[in-house]
Length: 242
Image (cartoon, rainbow, N blue to C red; front, side, top):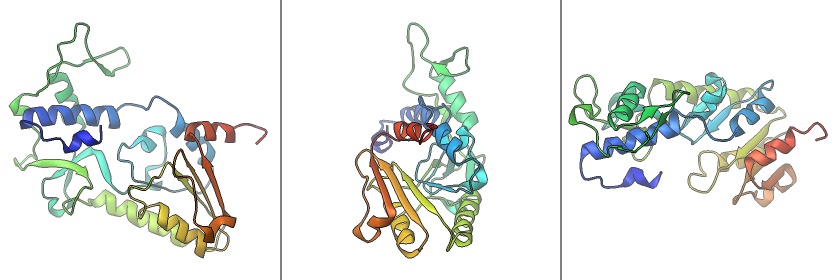
C-alpha cells in the first residue's frame, strides 16, 4: 500500500480512486488486532506521551488522549495545498466516503464499506469528484515526503506539547518505549530515545521489534530489547503473574 502512493497513475480519476481506498482502509477502519487497545490499558493511568511516525491515527481511534499525541509525518485524514502553502489543511473524511460510494462500495451492517455481491467496483471516480480546496486549489496528501509538507496548526501544537513533556520529565524516572520503529526514519524516534536515555541518569530504554530490537553499547545496561510481535509481548505484560 505504501509503494502505491508513488505509482504513476494514468489520470487523476484513477489516482484519487486509489487514494480514497488507501485513506479509508488505513484511517477510518479499526485494525484487525487489539494492539493499540492493549497498549492503552498499560499506560492509561501513567503520565505518558506518544510520538509516532504512523499517519493512520489508530492511536486516537483506540482512545489515546489527543493532547498526548504527536504524529510527526502527517495524517491520512487531511488534505493540504499541493505546495504546502501556509500550512493549510482540510478534513478529507466527507470526500473519502463519497469517493468510496462512487466506486461502488456498499456499507455492511456495521457501517463499513465492502465489495458488493457480484463485484462491479469501478477503478475511477467521476471527474467532478477529484478533490480540491473550496477555492479550486489543488490538493495533496498531508504526508511528509518533501519540503512541501504542511506543518499546520495542529502539528505545531502537538510538537510543542511533546517538547513540554520532555522538559517536564528531565531528571525523572522515564521509560523511553519504542515499538516497531525501524531504520527508515530513525532520527525522529530511535536516535533521540537513545540519546536521552544516555544523558538522563534515571531513564530506561525498551524496544520491541521483529527485526530491529537492539541498542548501542553505551546504553546497554539501561536497555531492554525484545525481538518479537508487539501484540504478543503486550499480552505477556498483561498477565497477572508478570
